[in-house]
Amino acid sequence: MDIDLPRSTTAEVCIPTTVQFEEVYEMLNILASGIETLVNDEQRLCNESLQMQITLITLKEELSKLKLSVEESNAFLQGVKQNQDILNQDFVSLQEKINDLQYVSYSKTLVWKI
Image (cartoon, rainbow, N blue to C red; front, side, top):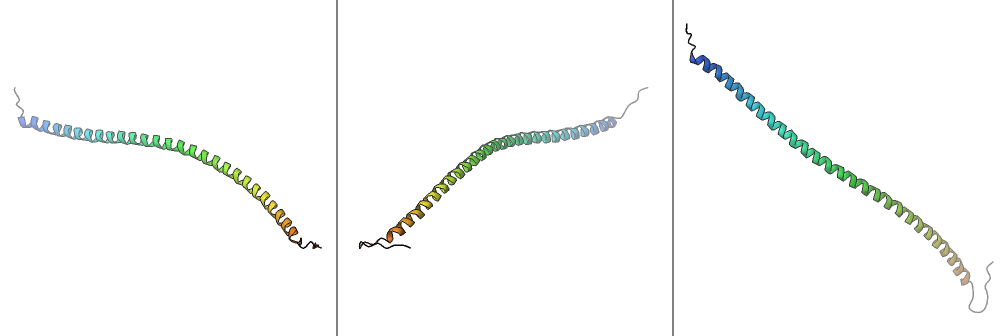
């Protein structure tokens, strides 16, 4: 008893399998492309993160330098203010001496301030 299966049945079975294989292959290619994109994004983000960390360290160092500079400037300005106060006192004292000397007459007479 020989049973002849029609060839079209075998061909019909192979065609859907081939189509499914092609669909799976396309899906795998899409997924592989997506994974490659994600890996590239991860690498880019790692590089950006490293750059930001370096920038953060640099900015912290600059901030420390600026704080020190501000403290030094404030100390300098405090010293300048003290010097200015002393000079103002000297100026007032000199003005008083000048005012006192203005009352001296050159005609050999004295003018007394009362």
